[in-house]
Length: 201
Length: 223
Image 1 (tube, rainbow over the protein chains, first blue to last red):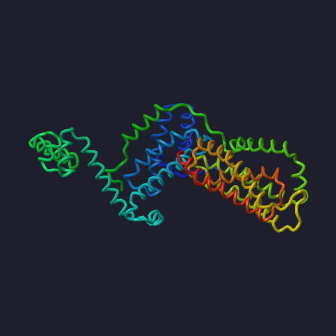
Image 2: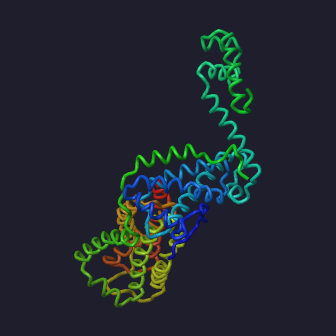
């Protein structure tokens, strides 16, 4: 069987004498022998290929990086299965496609409250709805990350007053801080979040 | 087309790549699928040799000479076992085509077809009788009992590989070990392939394949 190229070379800036696939194949062979530099070059080179495969499978933009990371982890775990006599791109493409499908399935399960028919979801997914939902989810995740990154006092104020909707006096009782400090912290936290998301001073 | 907000995350990729680089240790490359198949077949051959030493090849050859369809069924089972194991190992390597899963089909057709012919025969193979209910249960137990270690070994060997289609690989494992067990049964099988016996074999093979598909898929999907 001839090696099948499942991934078009996106980084076509390869030397003329050697195809990018052959070069990556040589790197992987070196990595199997423990060559760390070849391995890191190979993995960095693989990111674009993985993204291309995942996008072709229909993975949403905000999930691409997850698929990249999961694929890199799998590549690391199963690197002994690569045969340097065969195409590296085909090998990587198969792993990336599988991780992309896993990601789509996870997404499908999460959305199953709205839609139970997995077959319909796989085959007739409404791209606009999916990307809108993905964007909302992404936004919520970023907000949570931003809140988590606040200084402890400010974070506490946002959690108590903003997220759990406690009153000032309830929050003061729960946290052991006075209402004035809570108000100042909430104000500072909101300002920090505004700056982070809109770049307003 | 790409929204700059959700562009690639080069920093976290670089961090992961760095971590994986630190963890890199040399690995021993996996042997090619045909060699790994040969390794597994070695065990089957060892069991076959043990059974032949115990029962002798005489009765089997005598039975086969008189009823060629039984011989063909036995050969079909052997081919199925080899090709299914080979296909399973091939599917354990990412990038190999899923079409490998069809490899056991010709052998399986010969196995099933020739066994089916046995039912249409009106004469009975020498030295055998049409099995009663009790004996067919023995066949069932024989096939299942031999399939368990043979399947387990295949699962262990495949877990070192990376079967990206775990359920398909597990079905092939089930088919390989059931076919191998049926081949081994042929050595010490004192029954003609009457409909009841054939049904038992089919039942045993189906059970082995189904259990593998249900359990093996889970055992292999960690890859």
